[in-house]
Amino acid sequence: MIRLMTYGGTAAEDAAVTRTGGLPLVPTGFTWPRCSTCDGALQFLAQVRMDDLGGTGRGLFAVFMCDNDRGNCAAWAPHSGGNRALLLPAEGVSPAQAPPSGRTRLGEVCAVRYADVDAATYYDASTGWAKTRDRPLGDVLGQLGGEPSWLQGDETPTCARCGRRTAFVAQWEEGHDHRTAAYFGGGGCGYGFACEPCRESLFLWQA
Image 1 (cartoon, rainbow, N blue to C red):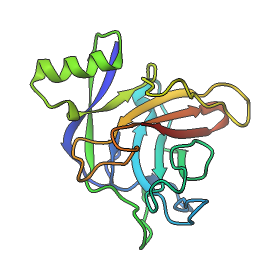
Image 2 (tube, helix red, strand yellow):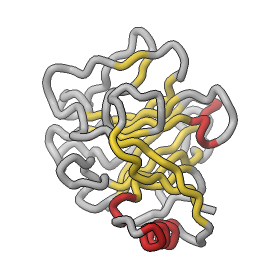
Image 3 (spheres, rainbow, N blue to C red):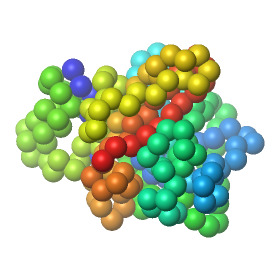
Image 4 (cartoon, rainbow, N blue to C red):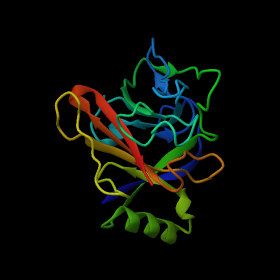
């Protein structure tokens, strides 16, 4: 069974749900992450309610990526400093204030609806879902949990603290509308991973 993330229309910028775009929900004292190469503010891409993967009290997984100078900040690499994934609490949080300059936000806030599809692969699940519901394939925003569908081979990162392979959280497509979508090399996918015991999280993309 593959759990697809599908486009569920627009959402509030501070919705406490799994979504793409808007503003991250953060605890007091949060500092908006910056790119280690260009020093520009990173763009907030998405948040995932970790409880959607099962369990309770697991917090929020938030993803940021540099979109200030495409191609020059290695935003695709998990340890480059050109992106950032964070595990944040789900309680006692409020919308972050975006920095006044830089490409910090996507052009649309998209609600995520889940669709559990009995299929062997992510490709089969996404194409089958779109066909049976007469929806554009672009309305598939990615998948939650399971196994990543790699475009260039397995790049599952290891936790810098314990050395174990991190757990797969979610895979994202660029978005349903190219005018407001994220940029993963042009038609690529983003991948989020976490080591919850160590509170470590990582992001990368392939195209």
